[in-house]
Length: 205
Ligand SMILES: C[S@@+](CC[C@H](N)C(=O)[O-])C[C@H]1O[C@@H](n2cnc3c(N)ncnc32)[C@H](O)[C@@H]1O
Image (cartoon, rainbow, N blue to C red; front, side, top):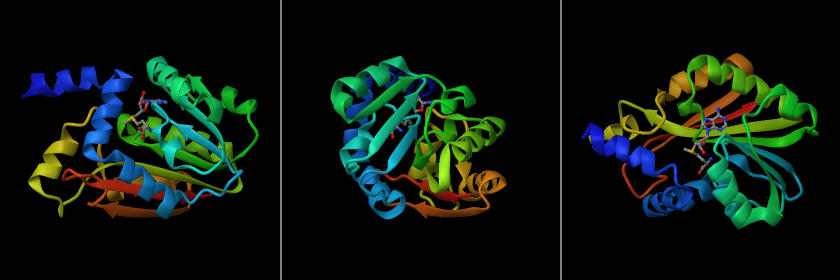
């Protein structure tokens, strides 16, 4: 079983395989709900998407001023190929230095990112997100989550995610609260076609 899950992780690094897998599990609906019910971007807003992957969220965003960062050059290349005219795509880690060249953002997204980072890396990333935001801006995060209410299958699936730091809803919330005193955390079991539990945090400074 360990060999199957590590093999799956390796093939998912190919953008086309990642997108196919996401389509099969119903990630498009998940992103649509995230945008409509949580991120609620208005047209023209400046949006920073950290860990943007292949930028699939763009299919669900209105006409915003979009900038996506990801450490995977392969994912960023795929994003440019599909959405080149709809935003800027940067193959790099987000840093203070990269933010120095950016105007403040109205919305920062971190979709499926925090569970790849350990607690100190999350704190550092959240501080960067806060620095990137305009005065009334907000950060929205979404990650797989452990919860006592989830089915054994959902628990097994999130436990075998590529990210090594899947947390409980409260653990995500507590980390966010260290940087964003106004944080609302929600648990959802209904966003994918497969049994799965998500934690969503809406954070304001
Ligand atoms: C689960 S994928 C989510 C991608 C995209 N947000 C989506 O919803 O399809 C996580 C992404 O985070 C990226 N990533 C991991 N660690 C990162 C870091 N420290 N900074 C930026 N991106 C990172 C990975 O390359 C990957 O594309």
